[in-house]
Amino acid sequence: MHTIFIENQNNKYFEKAWQIYEDSFPQEEKRTLKEQLKLFNKKSFTMLCYVEDEIVLAILFYWQIQRYTYLEHFAVNSTQRGRSYGSKILQEFIDNNQNIILEIEPIIDEITKKRLDFYERFDFRVNTHIHFQVPFRKNDQKLKLLFLSHKKVLSDNQYTTLYQMMLQEMSYEED
Image (cartoon, rainbow, N blue to C red; front, side, top):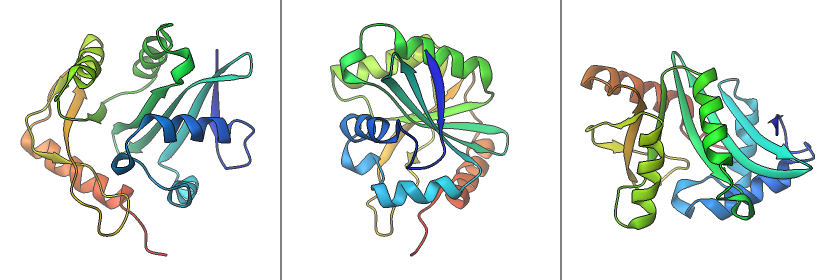
């Protein structure tokens, strides 16, 4: 398995990676292609895909926000699930990054419960802060999500400071 950094739309894996993104997340949790392409100009944003035998196995998009690593989108190709790729990739990501944070949907069914269980196996903790996704576009409806952090929960002050930094770094940009 190889880790591929996608730095622009011309990368030969971009279309396959983008398709995994489109297929894996609900509309309110993802950007449009136009919005996503703007992120390639941000030094704090990284788009990765994982490839084996020319098959895109998974995608992982993250932000470096001061001392935090925000795992924004992580998904395994639906044709490759159940083969431990998600576990291997997440463990490698944890080994190579510090102060990892992420969001997941509130627990409402078996699928969302399994997602939480997956992250808890890797020592992610649910924070009790009321958390809303940073808006991807102007006039977005507020999307309430669970906020997870690796190994320890954030204090109210840490969370508030971090969320302000996330809003500043990640919010939509006017055309």
